[in-house]
Amino acid sequence: MTTAMPVTLDPRLLVLHEETEAQRLDALVGQVRRSGITTPVAVTPVDDGWFVLDGAHRTTAALMLGLAQVPVRVLPPPASGPVPGWVHLLRSPLAEAALTRLLREHDGSGPVVASVVTGGRETPVRAASDDSLDWVRACRALAHCYSWSSYERLATLDPSDEGVRIAWVMPEFPRLVAVVREHGRLPAGVTRFDLTTTLDGHVGRPPANVDRVTA
Image 1: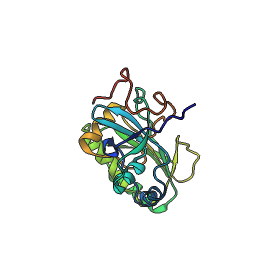
Image 2: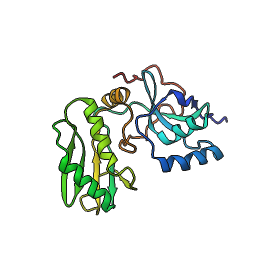
Image 3: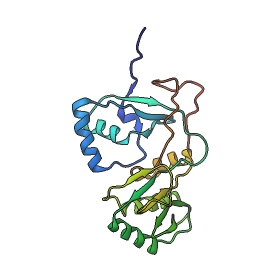
Image 4: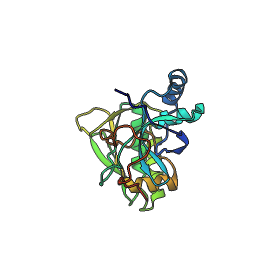
């Protein structure tokens, strides 16, 4: 009986779609320096490389340390429909004040980037227009309101939770890939991909019948 070797890829081939959080990254760099990357990075094939579904901090740590390879787990491209977004639960009065100012001053007619529940009221945050750059700008402006504050990630929006809740709203996966390619990464921790289905376990390249995402 033989044991399959973990599959690895050059981290320079991995396409990151979210920013990293400085404090978490600093801690992870030390851990990777001591023990390497013990949890494979979840990726899916796109037409110019491998799109990271989960593992932005691990990939960034590997790049910072000059690692030649990282372990990966290859998943099929996400199903059709909007990519699920995380709900960020905040309990900081300062963050709530910053979000309140943003909601008071922000006025957009484009797609919704998130719904903010504060003071018992749910308010959508919209991009200024349908332009994808405006969508990214709205995401970054919202995340900036609490980028310095700790938060808890929740899978669903529960109105009974105390504190401020930001329920992120993501586009479909091909659109997300296109936006990231054109305008750069999104704020940290906004996408919530299904990581339960793997293509033939650990594989180094997608089977011939797996469609690569083109956007």
